[in-house]
Image (tube, rainbow, N blue to C red):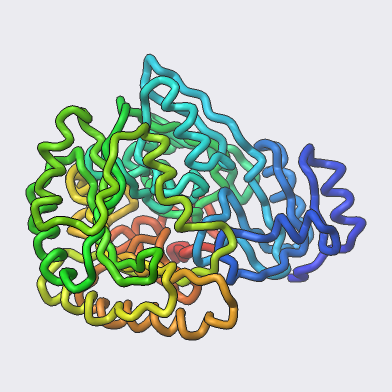
Length: 451
């Protein structure tokens, strides 16, 4: 099939959608093709900036009529860059905004271009929230479809666990609603199965009462890393669901290696100290930045560490158990980091997230004690090779302790579908056959339709 269409054909697409069609050569096209990961430099044949579901349907129809492959962008935060491909039509949902909160039912519906900060801002008007990542510019769509981990995971489960319903455009251009009593098999697949089945245009989530939290960071010297990681692991095994606390190897602003404990306590703030104090009891930190704050502030507290356009190599895996050997392998592999912007650590998403059956949603890795996060980040293209080499080496050394992967974490050279979908892969392949038998939506952690 041809992967190009003439300019007049794109003009015909512009006449048939309410949004803008951006073509190569314009300044707006050059700006709009950029995504979060600055390493991704791909040139779609055009960008259809959709304003609603009708635009999505028309853009799909146009692409299929002219034999053009399609990619889809919600927030453009994928480190692997799945939303961009050379010579494809980018169906851009980022202009499709809007959040409606029903405080009586404790639910919220959101359009596919919504980012996390926008969603939180609306739900917090009513003192409500759901599990949503740790960075306000992350796209809601990709996060939810990939599983979704965040500061509320141990208390309320993953983002996908709180997904009540969704509207999706199929490759045939049909709009289907997945929810209770209607396409429940599809809803199951959207809860962690990625963007494999169609283009989701809106979501409905369960919300929970969340007010002020106590959060921030405790920082310890790197020479205490081994003991701290073991102590922190044991603490998390008995910690209440209200606290999420991750351990990460980082570099301080004055360029010293360190260990950071990243904390969010979302229960009653007046009871926070009782839970948090044991974190301080390990020993006096060199910096104690824990404080009481709004949930929206908590969601944004680490935004400065993830600036748009930073060059990224992310990877990692799910660890069934954080063993002493895994801790040793982590610490021995990471230092020195080639970039002071990078971080590597264990994120603990136990609690409520682990009390969901592995086959209850498409996200299968409920038995993992922690997720290994290798977040290589640097600003200069001249340092691509050394940073990617470092990230691959860290992952290679930790791989023997891993079983499965979190799809939203995988990077530019990681075809991780077997690791991502685990025991649910065959069921997902049957669902793929039902909704996308020609594998039209394939620029993702792809599920091949069942034979």
